[in-house]
Image (cartoon, rainbow, N blue to C red; front, side):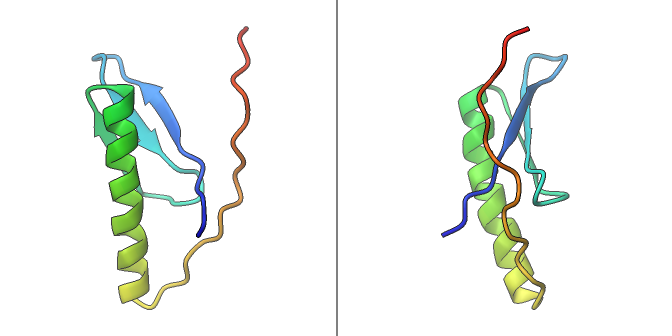
Length: 71
């Protein structure tokens, strides 16, 4: 099983957007951090399923999760 890093960003409207550096075009939105993460889990599954059905290669995870650094 592969694990893809996910970035979650707060939008100006207060919602959240999620994306993965290893899966271009695979994005999700949510009203909360948790909802965006759950939507992204589903989006990744759907994205990978579509790649498999199309006979496209599955990109290996290359991004690594890191600690948050307060500035």
